[in-house]
Image (cartoon, each protein chain N blue to C red):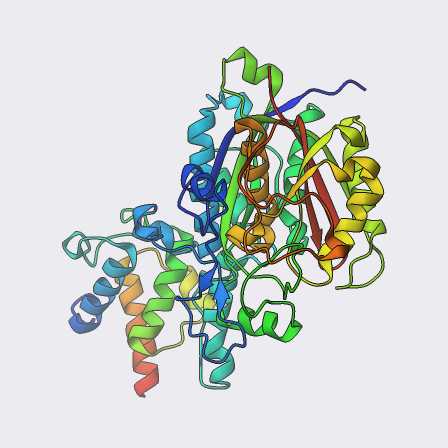
Length: 407
Length: 86
């Protein structure tokens, strides 16, 4: 079966690093971290204090008052990111093509903000006629991002949401990639969106004891855990043929996608599961491990993930693992859960396209179990291929293979 | 019918509709229909929520289903308010 090539013609994101792709990259390329004290929540009863928040986002600057009523924060972010990506791609859809455009988004939680706020009154006032807002269900459904993007642009093709915790966006982008590559669709708007910074969510993460009391230090000695963030990122994918025919600016290419399950433990990762997903991504892209020059790692900064990811990369890449340059942009924008893979897809696309790699922030020194060629200062990148890893709680792994588009 | 309806309730209903729908209050009269005001089914559900809050009543699903305009809405509210105070 012959495969079409799938290119990226639009990128959009709103993240703790800034309201759009250029502000994201201006800080990411220099390794400037947006992690800091959480300001939008009362954190007095939470053991950790830091997060990666989006500051300065005013929903009414993006939506009419009435439009906002059924929109949770996570869906607002999804639409804002999609608008930027679509504006850049300028896809010039015909009516027929709108039916052949997919919308596939990832979200771990859905509308957690609305759920938290809505249910608080119910649980605090049992039997006292407490009510929730009638838009609570439309706000909290995890597919809200996909639905509002489809409505915004009148896109009528295959549209759904994938929820696989921290791998959600990679699974979503991978599915969209396959839809376009196979010819089922000609275009896709795909990515992830998450707004997980709510009081209930903070307490739940605190209880799981995986959040760092200070900051996110991927692959570093003395790393203490992940740092939560919020954001959304979207990509416009398009068949190379269509993009070329209309003279679109091509920003990069998705060349492969691999998935696996650890089938082992709900929070303890294995080497085998992630390694299998990386191998599947390379097989899917029909390339050899020696071609991988850059890795945007899952790199959560938890004691458990980083050495396991190191071993998985070494197992699949072999000798190339001493050469492929590794970053984890979670040290910059935080762990945005269902949006993580999407923000990292933006980073990987720009890394290959602009030939510059964003460094890991907050690194303190070598952990011998995480001895990969880490990017610790801004550097040039001449890699042709990059992988971007996402490994979720529940042992669900998704790896995207990116290729620099050189025509 | 209209004369028997409490003008106070009608005005309060109109105010709730105006605020919820982001409509100028002078555009809404007792004779306005939901169709004229572009109030769709989802808007209607939110109106019921706001009316329940405003009048401290409980509007049953079946009572709400047939309402097509402001006058019927205010009448329905008036009945429920009367039941509450009876």
